[in-house]
View 1 (cartoon, helix red, strand yellow):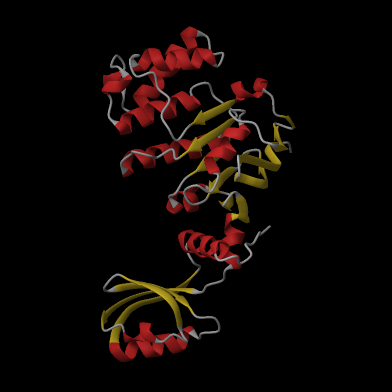
View 2: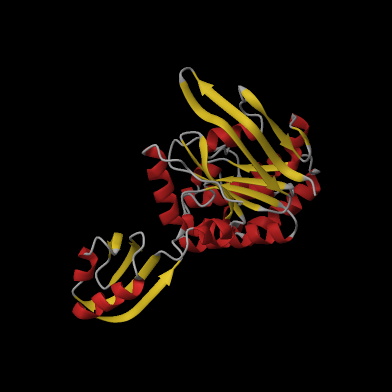
Length: 309
């Protein structure tokens, strides 16, 4: 199977600052891939190098089994983190224009625009100028623009920015439909819940380098069931036991904690029942958010990051 994207040790420097440092990863065809990292980690710079907005100082970008050229752009849909709408153009005309730039004939473009505006409940604003729309509606228009020409590879940089939960969920449903249709999707986001729901594979970057990569399920399972979720009434004295609890987040009657290395969860349960009434005690895999924070903190402290197959 031909991979949709291969990054081969790409590096980008700005004067003395290295934004991306020898970064490599492969996105198989039909995969939903998450590019993650804290602010300033190099995610957007990486995406811009993928599609030729900026060129890497070293390394190679391969797209659809070939070294990347501008000829590949018509097969790519890109939603940038910063909106790129012509504010004074009317929404329907703007979308039709974007589709035609990607080679869609005008009659077909107008037909697709009408269908997408109906799907995302924007029909009322078809003749409104883009600048008259709310930020959330502008984001939906930008989303439509990125998929209107039926691209093979869809790149989403913070696709749910400015959207309420209902609209963000609708775009998630559409992305899964695109995946079912055989499209390849890359998205960069700070929302770990979206990653856990949508992604097959991930790369986590920090300071321009990959610090964690691989199949999402394998990444999570490799950390084991070291997290505990507890619902309780009473005192949380058990959280003070440093030999059992490495870290915790106490939300009153609900606590999420990470077991200390070698700690026995049964001992923690016995201790908890001494001072509280326990209605739930569940040993679980750590969330991706917890893994994200742990890996980023370790990489900041100079500890080696990991990669997982």
